[in-house]
Length: 200
Image (cartoon, rainbow, N blue to C red):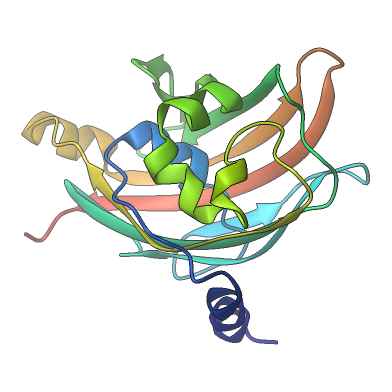
């Protein structure tokens, strides 16, 4: 089934309520859960045989990502085993490829950072809860089921013209989801994307 058909089917099933996303942190957590290539951005599953998360389909607009600017994202994924109720960590490891290869550091929760997934959901319920099959169960543990978000809005903060040149380029990396109490990896996403100057 083509990706667009998958997304249309899931949209009818869930009729997800979409709320604005107002932080880059939420963009990293939700936006990078996209498992299909669209345009220059590619997001592929790198999880092992014991993974608990399976990516179905997704898209990001615009692609390439424009900075400064806004994003719209659609994402669908399945959870095949209940995820941890606590100590559930998301780690982003990001590398900028040009003009020279450079590891992207973690600065103020943006970049190659680690995040507590349960705390993020708790602190950003209006953004995350619409993607849950039952929004009343929004939070950890994230239970077995299908999760879907349609056209989630992300406003990327404008850090000034200096950052336009700094951020412009191609990136690759991984995002992993781990139960830190047992060091069990529940999911892994390999990512590649491009940031270009906004035409606005």
